[in-house]
Length: 165
Image (tube, rainbow, N blue to C red; front, side, top):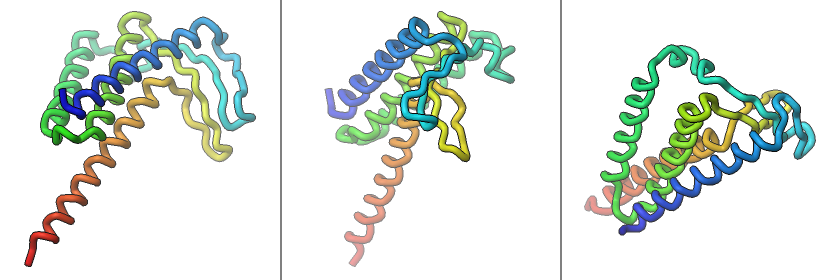
């Protein structure tokens, strides 16, 4: 198994396990709506149980359609992973983050019928909406994937410039 696949599997499984463990702890130890300050006003925990209908437009969509959309997304991610270089650890890590986080939120939606958000950052002028570890994994994965794409493009441009006479 190549380095890209090892990175993908390790990160996907780790991100899913951490997400589910932290959500379990939030359900067990945090009361709904009661904030817990960790770093002053900047960072804290507050449990917000979100029913599936918070999906807005998707709240009325049958579960089979949501699963179909998820399968399409997983297929696109698999395609990106398959097309990346065998030594591209960054692509494996990025896609592992996205898959682990996505599967974590899907599990919650279908088994708990809600996704628990409990992480809160307040920058003073802007407070992030409350989120959960799966959301964080997905955001990190997308950022890493963009970084991988930019780095790949930059290296192709550099290689192209070197080969010109």
